[in-house]
Every structure is written in C-alpha cells, then in structure tokens.
Image (tube, rainbow, N blue to C red):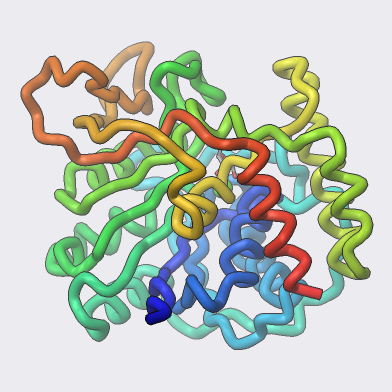
Length: 316
Ligand code: BDR
Ligand code: CA
C-alpha cells in the first residue's frame, strides 16, 4: 500500500537555499503535501521574504499554495539580515517577473495556530528554514498547538562545526535566540539540520551546468541563484561550492536514510556573553536531560544532490 503524503507547514525566509528547499518540497507531491508557507524576517525583511516565496511558488507552477507574511522582527532584539549572502532582494542572481500571486489575508502566526487546531493532532510536520520567531510566537499565544504537531524539522544550529554568524552561533538561531529556545524547550520532537551536516551538502562542481540544462525559466534562474549564492562561502571558507542548508530538511523527509545523527538533549544559549545563540548539543549525555532532538551530522552528498536534481526535473 502506498503511504499518504506527509502533511507539511513550511516556515521560511527565502533566500536562495530556502528556494531550493521549497522547490524540492513542491516537486514531491506524492510524498509531501504542503498545506501552506509562512514567511518570517531573516535573510531579508519580511516584505521581501514573502514576496520571494510567492515568486518561488510561481516558478514552480504551484499557484494554489497559500503564502502568509509573518513576524517582522525577533522577539527580543533588532532584526539582523544577511544581504551579504543572499543579495538585497534575498534572491539575487536571477530576475524573476511578478509575482502575480498575492499573499493571503491575515498573519502567518494566526494561520499556523488555526491550521494546527483544525487538523487532526499529530498529522502535521512543521519545517523551519529561518529564524523561529513565527513558530515561537504561535507557541506563546496558543500553547495547545505544541502537542498537536507531529514534529519540527529545522534548519538551524551548530555544535561541532563553528558558527556562521558568531564564533558559535548559526544564523537562524542567532537572529532570534529567544524564539529558538522556546521551540527547543517546547517538548515537540525535533529533527535539527545544523551546520554540522549542511556544511557537508556543498554544491558539486557539475551542479550549475546540470541546472542550466533544465528548461527556462527554471534552469537559468536556478543557475543564476547558485552562481550568486556560492560566491560568499567560496570567499569565506575557500570551498568549491556553496552549502545547500535548507534543502537538507526536505531531503531528510523524503529520504531519511541519506542522513545520520544522534538523538540528544539540545539547549539554546540565550545568556552567554560570547555564546548567545549557540545550540549546545549534549553529545555524551552529560546533563541528564531528556533527548529532545535528532541532531544530524552526516549526509550522503552524492545521494542528496541526485535526489534534488531528479525532483527539480519534475518541475518542467
Ligand atoms: C541559514 O541561514 C540562512 O542564510 C540560510 O537560508 C539558512 O537558512 C544557514 O545558516
Ligand atoms: Ca533560510
């Protein structure tokens, strides 16, 4: 018997790597049923992340997916953005028309709460690709929705790998550590794709040429995004490619066997003078705390890019 698709809500701040994650999900309707996309301030302000999400849905030919704009700033600090990585639009590297699609009326947080209350408990997975402000706000306002989630699959954090926004903090956690802490301490089962694993998902040398063979406008757009996006990490780390952070979450849902990690207690540091925004993974279970997250550390890079490419060809 064929399993029904996993039902997803995706919270995101597109970003070129968010775009690949969204396209991977939208290209996989047999396995993943995307109920809605909620946008948050992160890589760029929320007006731009929500516009970008609409453009991505349009590029994928998925006009029916509801897209909501959400929180415009973190819970307890000023918004810090990442134009140096993603460009001023958040999706620099290719020019897209439009969007002709419109945002849904209402706030992303209200949509998250209403959907989780309306759908059967345990039937929805929440994927997070940006700072956790929308999700934490929803949990604060409606604590009853936490136990209704099957799990949260999150791109965020770093432990054995150094941080990319501070010496120890990864961007999505660093932008809103209080929100990340609320989600980590919520009791919802977590799967975390931290830098430890996403820095192993580096675009391979043939990637841009492979993308360019996809029909227009998809192929040239994806190639342009990758070209622009790779330049930051090439310059910073001296790598050959750029890390496809956010698609690791969706690839995990589609083919979990591509990944490995360990279930451990994970805490978010919000106080430390030098360590604010760090995700402290208790790898050897020193704390006696209960495991709250599957912390991913390894990926089959070849299998990951094979999956991503194969699904992108379905968007023709
Ligand atoms: C995360 O930060 C953003 O710049 C990317 O989109 C990804 O979600 C990686 O640290
Ligand atoms: Ca992101």
